[in-house]
Length: 168
Image 1 (cartoon, helix red, strand yellow):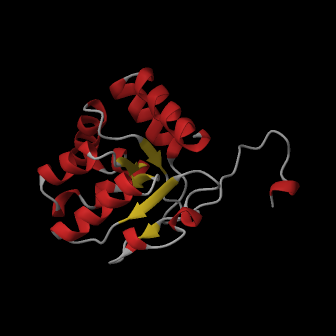
Image 2 (tube, helix red, strand yellow):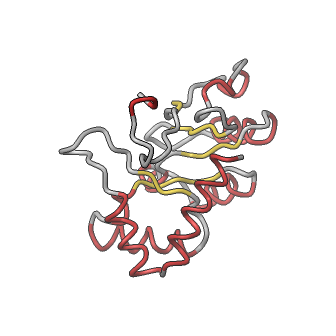
């Protein structure tokens, strides 16, 4: 597909969310699941309260594998986890990504998202686009909200973080 794209097209990085499973931290060649030749593992966690073992295993990946763990769409997990869980993960080098929709779906979510962003708990913004109807691309809309509410430096920081991760 890359060969067919016009020169002005954005760069495309192959990758996927890697769903957590018991034993993932002991998986050989875990680096093969990273985003397009980087050391970034986009980790999707289960949609329920995580056990201490699950949290430890995510930390083990971040500390012992040489991989950068980017936890996918934490906005979906926030209600089920305790605040100290997020602090512990972040203290152990795990980075957080939220979906653009978090900044677009109602004033309550937007307020929470902006608070997390201002506190430096969001490193990367993603679209979680699956189609052009129910889960369409919405990064531009979210970036406009972020720029208006948090300033252009917040947008710059998100873009710089993403580039730094992809470029190593």
